[in-house]
Length: 176
Image 1 (cartoon, rainbow, N blue to C red):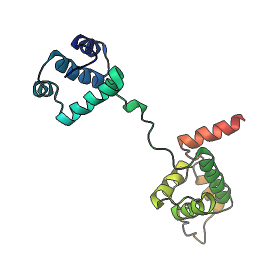
Image 2: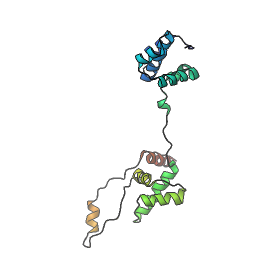
Image 3: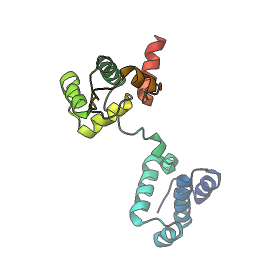
Image 4: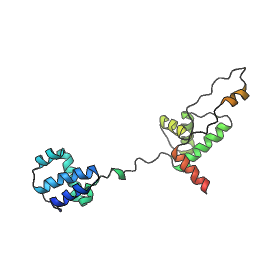
């Protein structure tokens, strides 16, 4: 097997690297560059044939940068709602609940379909309710003798929970 770099180059990467993935990959290539058999190198490093093939292919395509761990480059899946859409949802729910409206997952799902044209699974709609600081709610029955003033005094005076995305969006709008 021929490599662009020598075994000494791979051992140098192995010694100086602080990334376990890069160290392990350079370890494999150092053994192979020294002339060890594939079976012996796999036994020493614990790689499978398929895993070793991927590493060798990445090395031949990308060079030494193919040995690096690329997982930190992964940004994850994109958000289902943009910042503006999430803020619009939060403002709509807050305005409606201030006038006595009650929101649940089905209502959020309908609003998303009608306003944003997005069809989402019901469980995701409950996540968005939670993201804007609300939970699944159904109005409770009111007792005939209930004292609204005493009930209001009893309620906690905590601010609603906001998701990180909503906090970031609203603070950006406040700065404008």
